[in-house]
Image 1 (cartoon, rainbow, N blue to C red):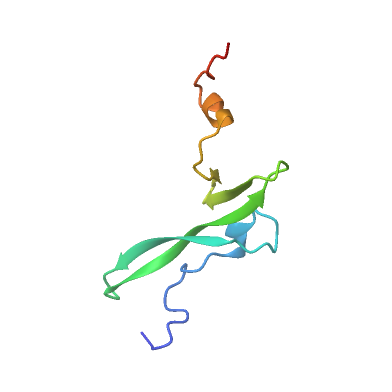
Image 2 (cartoon, rainbow, N blue to C red; image 1 turned 30 degrees about the vertical axis):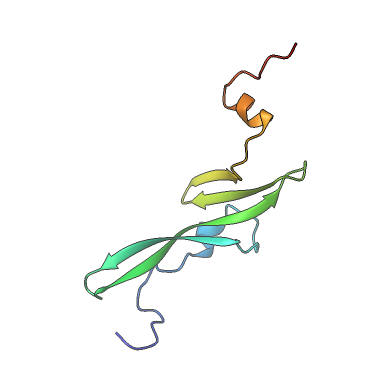
Length: 96
């Protein structure tokens, strides 16, 4: 338990094999970490469990791709639009 902290906790860093789902060499915009208390060290460490990348759709809308393990999610800003209500199963308002 030296002072620098390098190499103290194997598995603390994400390996390139875990990030192969995205284009090789593209660094994620955000890292996803999970706090874990280690009684032997008497402190909390943060394990890398995923990453998030910023993307822009063909229509010019910004969204993020979130990957945690084998789970892949798309993350959109929470703004209400007529298209969002239709895609969620609600009926669009009737016009006369």
